[in-house]
Length: 438
Image (tube, rainbow, N blue to C red; front, side, top):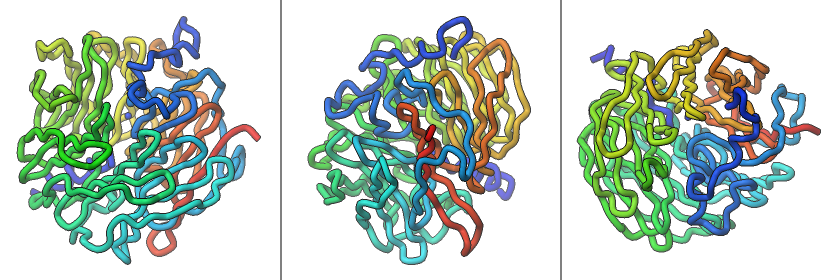
């Protein structure tokens, strides 16, 4: 049991381009592929409205060159303190940056808003008080789920009083509705909650998976009332479900419970499933063409590719794991920085290893592709910047910011937004940075 607890405990948090082609070719994607077409008040070029960005897969949209080198003082446009503690990533909508956080001493969950241009704190809304779980893993927080925004409302999820609670706020921080999504009381592994809400058309989709009454639930974005609810296996896992337009249709993809699963995001009905990955996963699935990719790390390590045409055919698998972090798939190749700090490039169709490079772990943050570079940090605050080249590893820079990096960056235009922390114990302090060329 100790070994099992150690392995699964590593997996709590999340909560994952060019060769001959132009380095900016990746930025030209359809509104349907971006997943943002259902939300007219959002712009893929201006906003980063939810976990893994407008395209939902860690690919930024836009043709501007992006900064590649920075430090605690170099190319910092602004830096602002973040109260409390959290591993959720920033989202950006319009002229504001939003975060969740938790005051663990006072047991308060909150949503924060900052001015995008200056970093000035605009408002703080406390959405729940008390009801924190008795235990959580040291690497998790009570605010690990990233917000989602439809251009009018913010959607937050927290583990509160043995349930997962969803709250909708307007962009000025006023509560619109608050509902209990479902029960959540892990018994075997008391390691907290991590999945982020996913928006699809008129719904917000939320996973509540534990060794109890597990489900994926869709709530109406306007009212918070339940639209559909699909039971899942009674088994704790931490992955965020993601909607992708794959093999000619919208599919809600999630890994965990020893399966890769696809559902119809309109009604929650199963489309297909394939045996694979592991008991517990944390990363969000990625896709390229009609192939989807997933990775997990307890009780075994496995990364695999599945044909998403409904056949459930497993094309390939290996014994590597991106457990807490997600991967990045682009133009036929998969880039994966494993938890131990080894970076791989695999061919998507057959899993052929193109190259691997030893970097440094551990890793929880997921990658972002922007301006022809991939950005991914380890837990120690080192952000690796490298070219997405399947022929060889091309390092561009290694940048230290703060002492830790669990959240993933948000990259819009030529600006990078990063949540980080310095110090430890009582001296630990969190900050939100906006990086760019001065």
